[in-house]
Structure formats: C-alpha cells, structure tokens
Image (cartoon, rainbow, N blue to C red; front, side, top):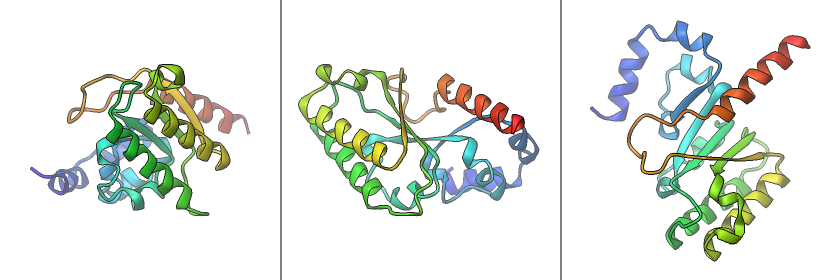
Length: 173
C-alpha cells in the first residue's frame, strides 16, 4: 500500500474526533500535502519528521505549511552528503520569505556540541541555526533514536511538553 492509499484510509476512518483531542502528533513530512482536512487542522500541534536523505525529495513546498520540524538521520558523525543535504535545507528555509510558518526545528543532541561534529556537519548546523535565529525559529536539541527510519515516529517528550505548556498559556489568556 502506498502513501496515498494510506491517506485515503485515514480519510475514511473515525480518527477525526480523536485528533481534535490530541495535544501533540508526530507525522512524516510527506503527509503534509496529502493529509485529510482533520489532520491539516492539527498541523500546529504536529512535529513533522524529515529524514536528512529526503531533503531534496520535493519537500520545499511542504516546509511552508509545517510549524514544527524534526530533522532525523543527522548526528555528529554524519557523512558529508548529509551536510550537503542540510545545506540545501538551509537554503530552502532562507529562500522562503513571508509565508514560512516554521516555529521550531528539532535536531539530535549530538549536534549541540559542535566540537564533536565533523567539520562539514558542524559548519552546516551553524548555518542552519543562524538562519533559524534570523527568522525567529527556535532550535531544540534532544536525543533522537538511531536507525528508526521507516517505522513509527519517535515521540518527542520535549515537543509534547512545549505543546502542553502552550495550551495552558492560551487558556490563561
């Protein structure tokens, strides 16, 4: 079953009531343009996973709709091609003007210590962080599972905590 068939099944399911009640979701970025309306309404509470090797797989348009992005498959010891992909992602974010919705980017905690990163990866992470700061995007470093590609997304405790805090803040106002 391909991704479009899975989304069609989601559209016909009774999940829409549950999605309204969720505080946080985690989905693959490729669902952005295929998501049924009830999922699209939860994008502000969704952490989208983008594997570093898939940066150039037509995700540029999806980045405009995403508020929270987790870059997976990139860590301190990553290969030079991953650094090139990160550079491409940084250029994509840099090129988006007013319509960018991105509020946070999640990176592996090993990337927080630039001295342990390969020079290519370190340079590109520094560039990404600089662009994020210029655009008011928060960068969050947290432990990410290794070798999890192709299965259910790893739930981010930090993202969930931030979503709960945001919901409380909004209720107080």
